Image (cartoon, rainbow over all chains, first blue to last red):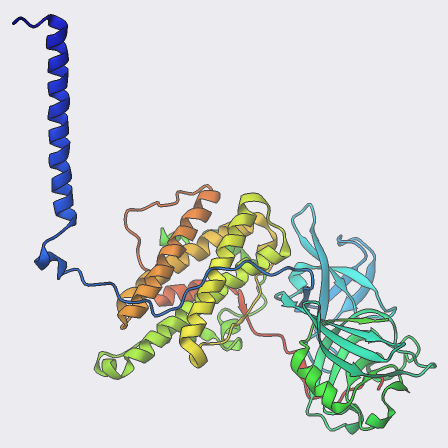
Length: 267
Length: 223
């Protein structure tokens, strides 16, 4: 029998393929044997230890819808109408409050000058209430974030503390008499005072950025506080010089739940 | 590579920008201090009795670094100054770092140190400064974990810390890529001694004393 040239070529190709397959099989056997050590080798590879830490799936940040930001004032600064060192001044901001705590400002926004300088738009604790201004970022300390908001309804004489938009505390309040009204608007909690000896303020008092629009000569500037009382029987009612009064039980609860920097809405 | 951590501009520039407090003073004021970052040095003689304490010190050391990173990414995400790939990196890595904090705090329980206050001095609001600082932080974390690994007494704990360490290395590669730097510049990475880590963190002045916002003065509010 004679084999033609094309058949010889096909046979040679088939032989090469078969040879390659045998070689591959040999390599696979070698690899498998290397990856499957015998018993003596297995004993050298003990099981890995269990983890001491409990790991969970990373979770993204919660919504910022109810987030407020504040920063301490680290250096005396001039708040200006615009983010520009030549803009008209609005107020001088000190580093301390009249109560000798660190002054803080609520952050509303920020922008960067062409020169690269960062400016922060802040709510100010000055008269008129509601004033805002721009301060250089370098005058402020580290940012702090809070998820709470206190809403004071003057008509119903009620306060509601919200966390992430949900009410976590409700209380009856006393507000300013008609001659010395509690101002309406957007404010923030500036400090927290305790262990003082002044029963009229109860066991705890929060200072706010709100100021009485009429008692401008009041000692320390006429800042509006949120505090306890030694006359709980007057609540709710128009009983104060502008401060928001609560029963001592309620102010203590508020003290546990409301951090400094919390925005305050009075309407 | 590790020698380049501090000169990576962001950290040193951030430190230079605000030079209001003496070096090292802020860490002490914050109650964190070098003592916490340097804690856990264990003498061989007391090894058996102190191995658990040593592991706790290593965990707390790791926790401080994780606090530093998680607060950094969280603030960057909340300030909203980052866009595109950098914003995505901050979002993903921030979630990882927060999970590292949660896991470390859970295992430390009551001996976990409290989260210090941070002031990133505008770095989280500037994409370029953020990127450079993130490179420095991730390289720092990788080198710091590596240095501690041989000191860990508990095998279970070592396994856990290694699983964090490799993720930190991925973070480092990711942000290095975004910064246009070689993600893996060397065949071998060096560990970074704790004193060097402390010095670098101190130099940033990112750890600050909490603002004193409460007091005992009698109120003078309108009443």
